[in-house]
Amino acid sequence: MEEKQEVISPIMEMTAGEMLRNARTTGRRKREISTIAKLLCIKEEFLEALESGNYRVIPEDVYILGFARSYAVELGLNPDEVIQKLKKELGIVPEEKDDEEEKSEPCAKAPCKINKEMMLKYAKSSYEYVKKHWVWFASGLLGVIVVILLCVILFSAKPTSESESVNDATVAEENVVQVVKKEPDFRYPVHEKFDAKNKKTWADSRVVLQAEKESWIQIKDARGNTVFTRVLVPGDVYYMPLSDNYKGTFGNAGAIDVWVDGQLLKKIGPANTRKEGVSMSPDALKSFGFAE
Picture 1 (cartoon, rainbow, N blue to C red):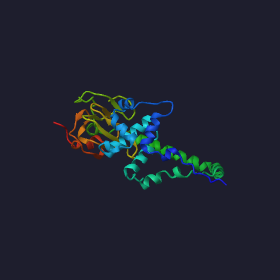
Picture 2 (cartoon, rainbow, N blue to C red):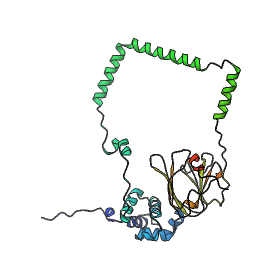
Picture 3 (cartoon, rainbow, N blue to C red):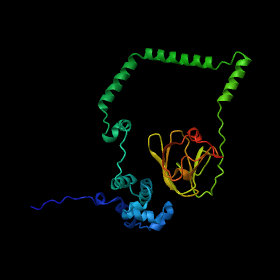
Picture 4 (spheres, one colour):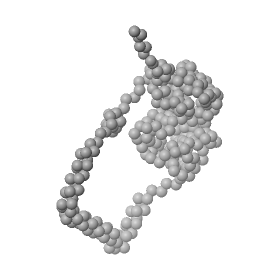
């Protein structure tokens, strides 16, 4: 009898670098590293280092992972699979999911089953009950309508005196927050503009980032999902979406200009310093103070 040989997927045997090189050099759409390097604004030597597995040519792990993710996306690979292999090769332990996130997706691991027969039986019995006691339900509905009408009449009544009207108007004026939006007077010529929706607009953003030097940034939402990650070259601009729940990670905190409502802030960190978990809320960023 012939012994069965175990078939192993060649992709599982490949390293992250081999996956990238294989995706670039095989298939119908073969591409040159120089072309991709210009498109991603990443040095050719860094892309070559990723493909050859010589990762230490790239200065920090955060740049290695950032470059690899952008490269994988551009080549049509699954970036999470490439990053997972790369972390194992670098000896980086992947982050574990929070218990709350696992609980919030109970149907992700096992399909949710619905007993259709039970639902139909329950719907039928509910219909019979409502049909039998329709007078009660009609009376209850009528009572709710009467309460709503009374509330509308009471709350729509005008103030009884002129002084109350003046006071209400004063309070309303104090509660109005006016945000004057204008395009920042960027300190450097704009190279390229980005935002989460791929729209080049300032009207929908209060926080704007511009790269002074080459620096990797990553923006995540409240659930930890990445909405933007890229290596910005000098002059690149990123428009933050309107929300107070975003967090930012900066590979070189001293190389990024931060503008809030058209005003330049002080640097969020020293040059060549990694900064994580920075709240991108306009009010939180203003705590750094405005540049002189």
